[in-house]
Length: 401
Image (cartoon, rainbow, N blue to C red; front, side, top):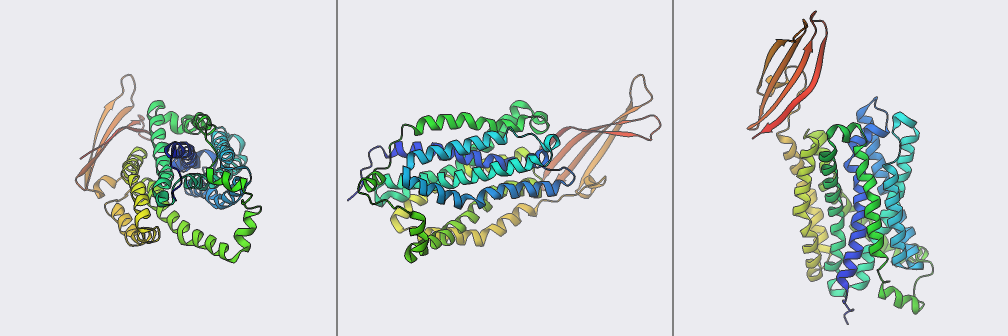
């Protein structure tokens, strides 16, 4: 007998909006990892600072299982609705506070410690939110359509990343690169979180408790100690291990390698600029997201197992060649002879500065690589004695197909 589906889309919308916002909060940190490394860690070693930032980002993943256990237990005791509200407030508050933490230059080692603690709270909140939202929708859905209905919750992960990238690019364009990178512009995506959370809380306050949970609670069949029953019962413990190592771990590697690591790879290894790397990801996410729903629908027809196995096998076979192809035409050369090593040319035009004996030198560089012309213009001020050269920042930098 099928469960009633009346209002199922209202349930999916209310669950998805909150979960999407939590993913947005979670990904803002990783999307701004390069800037965060400069703000919250010592600048003596940029590589070490970036690695420390990524390690702090990873800490949120380490505590996610504990968040799932804690809030899953809480959800069994007080219900899904109020647990959702708690995880949402915890995530939104943590994200907002990250945007308020003073930089390393202001408070020293306390800055990365505070950021790490807030990041751990984010991980705990997401651990409870994501699984709770999927459970809430599944408890409303008929058994033969659970894959399709819960797949909408899965799309919130990609859409959260999509929105975080879109917000970052929009704010960066609005306030300017200088203010975003060296001023307080990078804080705005974190601070914006509080507005999104308030909207989501308003939506979730209107949610009803899961009918399946209500029925079990009224019948006195909810577990009094779900953690004990999960790990002490041999059969249940086997299911926990299968879910953790057979499904979740592989899916996590596929997802974060395919979409999130790609941003760092494109920017730091392939040397694409800030905007380019994020626009590529935006396009990729927009194209990939509908497949969550498609495969969720298909899993109701043929089962979940073979779809998961096929996805992981594709990752094993194709990830390395795909990333190798990204890197194939990337050649990074530094130093004064870089344009010539890459097949390019450089020209200079020097003029006296009026009223002084100093000169203004304008250098134009063109680098040809893979049928693309990279062009930049830079000005240098040369003192009269020729001993001091004050190099300026490039004033024009473009790329022409």
